[in-house]
Amino acid sequence: MLNNSSEIAQQLLAFGKTILGEVLFPTVIPEASGLVATDPYAFTIAVCLNRGMKTEIIWTIPYDIQQELGHLNPKLIYRMSLKELGSLFSRLPRRPRYINDAPRTLQELTRIVVEECDGDAANIWKGKRAAEVNRTFISIHGVGTGIANMGVLLIATGFGVPFSNSDRKHMDIKPDAHTKRVLYRLGISEEETEEAAITATRMLHPEFPGELDGALWEIGREWCFASNPDCANCIMRSSCSRRL
Ligand code: SF4
Image (cartoon, rainbow, N blue to C red):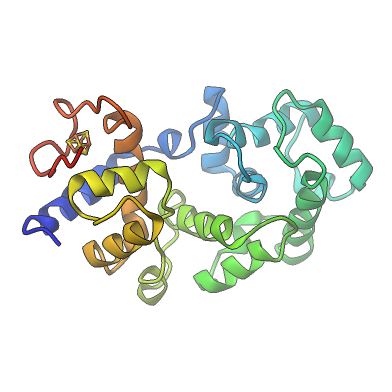
């Protein structure tokens, strides 16, 4: 770990606090971002359908569903058959990658929201431990461990849900191309790999490693490009090792 690692951690945490929901939930249509940032059902739909797609598309799909149906009411969607849900997805301007699995995923999520959460998707996490929320996501058709972890992390960072300290210690970043690259270039991780990124962030911010995720991701998108990074304007320019 670098001598200035605590300075880097503080910079990342401070920057992370300035990131708005619109940045955490980038969408093709601006209004769509507000929907997933404020409507727990819209948010969980995007999380559960998030498989091998561009981030901007997946966060826009709940908005597309709302536009197509004229509502995003889980109690009404609960009454739709698998065939009707399949037809709904086929009419969307942007579709989930695994279009054949999507109706079942939405049906199973909606069943949980209506039957177990009194129609309010926020009850998936209200008063729950992170591991319970994780298990709920994984129980839904097509949702794997990585996506479930990402969902729980976003509930903590995007919705500000205060999971316990013992939960937060076990919440890692979701290593993607941006976060891996930025951590390596900063001099925090030893390799540009998922394992190195997770190990490095656990050492850098052991209380809540995943809290660094948003800042790292946004730095990768905004300044630390794969080629020709914009170091002159990057917020990390004073502390970065610039391992390019
Ligand atoms: S200073 Fe340059 S290398 Fe370092 S994080 Fe910023 S853009 Fe990347």
